[in-house]
Image 1 (tube, helix red, strand yellow):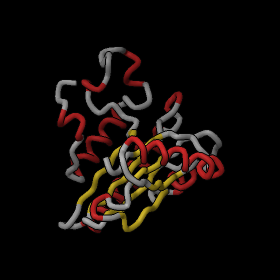
Image 2: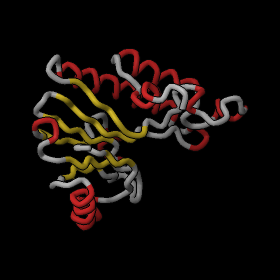
Image 3: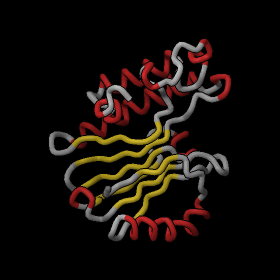
Image 4: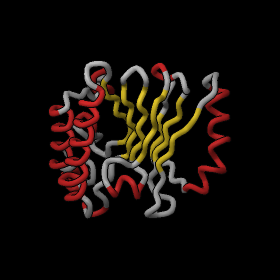
Length: 192
């Protein structure tokens, strides 16, 4: 792959400076070629969240721009997204969506703020990409979209666990529908 995405790396800026050469060396050896990295790190809490895009300069005809933390202030503070704009017109986003948390403490934020801002952000990027490109969004969405995504969907606690609540599942379904996105894993593995 030309652009693997890593989620929940939990590094700080100081760690990135030290570890990036080692990480890139692994990719350079394993994937044959020179790689670079774009990082999003949490400045809000140590050892929390973080996303990284590992890419070759030649990915998609060349990487014209990298950005991080554009969705909202929480994204910027918690290091939840990295974006690569490719010369071919494709926009690739790696993200680590906020979890609703223990006792669903962040459920309202997750569904009514983050998810709404994410949709708006992606709509704007989709318009920017236009006919020439498109969007590829990958990462940890912290949701079990369908019953098949849950080991025991009939368990009574499922409806009260982060990632499996009706509002989260419905919001993810709306994201896919409104932006005409495809869950690539489910599409390629309908029974898994």
